Amino acid sequence: MVPDDAPKSMVIQGFALVCLIWSCIVFVVQNIGIYKIFRYHSAPPPKPVSPSLRDDEVPHITIIRPVKGVEIGLYECLASTFRLAYPRSKMTVYLCVASTDDPAYPILQQLISDFPGFDAKVMVEEDDPLLHGAQGRVNNLGPNPKIRNISRAYREAKGDVIWIVDCNVWTSRNAAGRMVDKLFGYKPGGERVKPYKFVHQLPLVVDLEPPKVEEAQTLLSPGASAPSLATQGLGRGGQLEQMFMATTHAKFYSAINTVGIAPCIVGKSNMFRKSHLEKFTDPVQNPLLPSSDSSRGRGIDFFSSYICEDHLIGDLIWRSKAPGFRNHGLVLGEIAVQPMSGMSISAYIARRVRWLRVRKWTVLAATLVEPGVESFMCCLQFAFALTTLPWFHQQGIPQTWGAMGAIWLFMVTCWMLVDRIFSTKLHQCQSVDVDEDTPSFARGTCRPGGVRYRPFPEWLCAWLGREMLALPIWTWAVLLGTTVTWRGKRFRVRMDMSVVEINDNGGPSGAGNRVPTSPKASQTPRSRSKDRVD
Image (cartoon, rainbow, N blue to C red):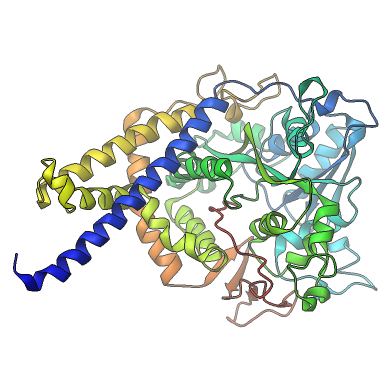
């Protein structure tokens, strides 16, 4: 080698060393996640302690379920709240909807009728006195439609424990007890451990076969109309979504929450204390916030001008001091099951683009390195390192393009086989407490009456499709746009992480469009959270 090539060679070898270190870190993190899933999702966890405590010791839970439109399995998902093995006198259930014109409104009324004896009610955003009526103003809250939907339910919560569960999520009978046990540190035999400030569940998407009309009717509700053939879907986007949530997302979600170096949550099923959030969103009581934030609301209203409210809530709770409490706790063995049907590939791409654009300014560093944790790119970095660094060459690895391609193909194949085993394990749902009320989509692939086990060729097509789309989706979302569409509305995501609703003419909408002081200035959103799927 001529001397002039020495600096260039050092730069290349330095880059190869970085690639080696990064890819090894990714492999280790994934193995942590895989280990946790196999350890805690092979059988149902022990029965929870809190439901069997004395009546005056059982924490009261306010369960808030924001609803928007009719989705597959909506009735069963919402009904799972009323089937929880938790003292009925210690539960308050609020089903929240924006308007009585929402197609889900009759289903919510049906649920209240089907489960009498509960402290439950339907809350309509149009009736919220903070936003409407003589004393209300529509711009008292920011444009976030989910926060506007559940604000009143949060303000009128009974007790201190808040459990926000999305409408398209099914939870097992013992989910409430296990979540409370984790939050309060309850253990069998009267033992108490250090409680958490915030607890959550692992989300799992189950893509259902396009149902027949009669089956679809059952999955919706006794009185709801079945989806049309168009909504039953000819695309395979649901398989891609299911693949993402059962492979890359689940591995990193479990691993990051095990290591506990940063908040990593999604907004599917989260539990926390109202007293904590009220304190943490008050600049007088929380030194992390500037005094200018005193003009914003308290509790969840504090986040109404941000579209990524679940991450921001979790991040603020994580960073705010509460002596005697641990930060976040993932309830291992519990899964938040989201049934899905009829999603097209274009809808899948749009969903991934939406949440990458939301995360772009929320967790910029994690978003920028995200392509490096995907199989094709990570294995490419590993193969490049092995065929570039001199030490590996001394061990007999050729420094040729052919050797690099062979190593890459071998590593991708190993990655794929591990994903096959891992996703199969998750979709068996062996940790779910199954009873007569458990719907088919939550029974898993290994139980009678469960969902169909996907043969390897079908699974492989979905895996390859998901992996090949990962980098193009990331490029389009992160580098080529800032607008998102969520819950039927268009928003522009600003660099300070606030959002502006866009009207049909492309300009900002007037209602609910208040923009607060940048949370970046108050350090609210600093984190490395993974993706969220709505």
